[in-house]
Length: 212
Length: 184
Image (cartoon, rainbow over all chains, first blue to last red; front, side, top):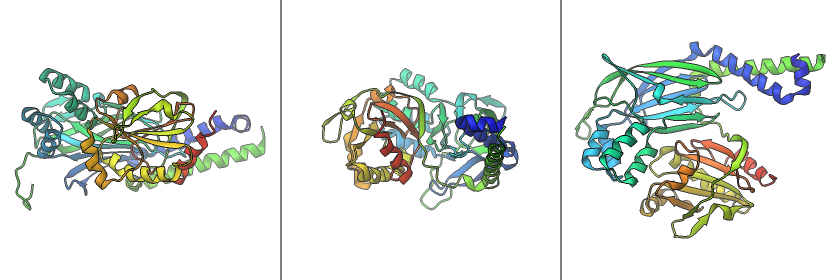
């Protein structure tokens, strides 16, 4: 059956073999999945990274002062900037690491992700949520454009080799601890992972050389 | 059933499984390796929305004026780390194919000329950088994050997409661009 399909439909065979490769990969995924934590070498701030065959998601703390500087320079008022800086911001890097040999599209929607902080369970604050906030507060268009594109996209489909960066908002106070439950689809399979023990960056006022 | 074909099938399947197992066993290192230089091909190429934007010198660029050439259309911003990362390789890639009917256009989203002019002191770029200050052009394309790059064939159709940075002087990527010049 497979040989006949191979002889008469090479494209279909390629698709089947890629699907089998992806299935074998995902079958072994549970054992290979891991949460890695440490200090991001570029930001010099704590990161949490979930790795599985075919994907990685890294969340790096951003200090409130970094957010203040970035958004003040893009036309936000001091009041607006304080709202952003106090909302628990992480730099987010999500990669589809599947290869041309076994490509598997990856799809996520931040509105499916769940934040557990103490007794609270909530969703993330997305581009769409912020757009309503800025419309209410009458933020200038140039600032809103910068904000929209600086944020991590709410929904995205990554093909093999695709990845993206952006800021994510957890709508918690500086220094708060939380667990993050993430969901994504890859190769037709729904995946879930929990990043435990995450913490929002503290709002510090350290002198040069002092520990944060 | 053809026995030879069956043997080929088994060999191909075992290669696929081996490939998958190799990926699994190397998983912890996988996040460290550079992303593969892939372009995602559109199943059905669609017409690229036309636009008119000015460059740093105020010269007007209309996408449809590049009909008959392959266009690499990159949406970017100076504050976006992967945008900055890929800019030098875009310059090198453009330098290699600029005389081969392949055009690179960088569309800056939401920033002004002063900001980009300052950026160019650290990232010298010679291909046209256009200004979409009100984000009207990016809204016409199905972009959700920066950088996103579209490849447009000589007939004005979007044939490929890349989300995130690439090494644009990669020989394989440039070969794909060159091959598109012959698209019907």
